[in-house]
Length: 197
Image (cartoon, rainbow, N blue to C red; front, side, top):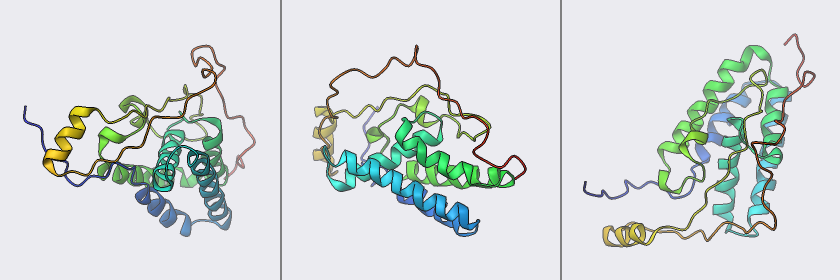
């Protein structure tokens, strides 16, 4: 099978499509939801600030937004999952389907414009269904797979005129993460959202 040249897809997660879809949705929502969206974006930006210790600013920001998507799928780390909870707890229940549709549209467009070879999470995690408060967020935490670009890919890209961006290896962990198989799942308990909304 012959290799094909990248169709102008970015190696960085194209989060702008997600932000745009959720900006549109929240602009027509309650003031509480608009405030929750602003706070959620601050949480995502805090994640990006952490990543700036290891990667440049555009790379760090795209990684943080990709983490946000994984959190929306119920597989995120606790910190970034806070952005997701902020949104769901301020969303009237009758708007669940519209909100899910807005997220799905934004994430689909982000994937459509991102070179899948550079996505940080395995297809099993990034294609998991989007979760609501009622679904819970007790899926095992997904592990990012930031890896250097293989030499064969770099060589192919250079011969085909495709720009290659090296992001560097992921940060080294001092100690291994808790084994997800034995960890207690994180579950959302009642009380975050008015039961009558």
